[in-house]
Length: 215
Image 1 (cartoon, one colour):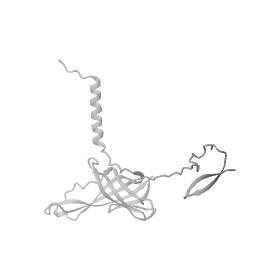
Image 2 (cartoon, rainbow, N blue to C red):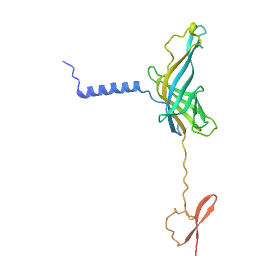
Image 3 (cartoon, rainbow, N blue to C red):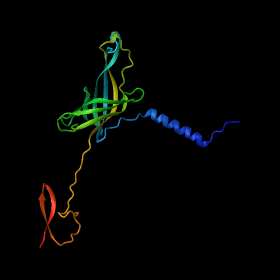
Image 4 (cartoon, rainbow, N blue to C red):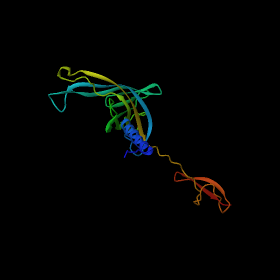
């Protein structure tokens, strides 16, 4: 008996394949911690610098080792800062900067450096990067270690590999406080009093209260 595939089954199969392909193409980003909010996003254009050196795990072999990034930070088409060893992000409009320490790594896809979630430490200098608490490196393109062989004869050789990425900077959520005015009697401001009165303002314990002067 010939096998029959219903149109619904075919549609489901196509949907599952599409979802799997999308999952493979776009890794899940490392989200910021609770209590943080996105402050701004800067795009980086530059290089990842590698040096050929003795392997840390095998003294008889050599491997490419990441030295530092070197990139400009762009916003709206204009250069607004620099990214360099540390890793450090520094502003061109003031003297503020921030350093990061990797907390999580996520696959950035074939040929791309990984996405990162970094804990941030800002300088005490006021400015754009002041009070940054975490950083995400997302949408990476390129930057992986060189394909060229790293051997004893090339020890000390430096390679600069082009890359781009988006850096998302997070800060603590701002807590807004709005004082609520109430009558001295405890009734909400604007509610009619049962006893006619002439309201006057006074200050009590650094907060506003509405008292009444009876005739």
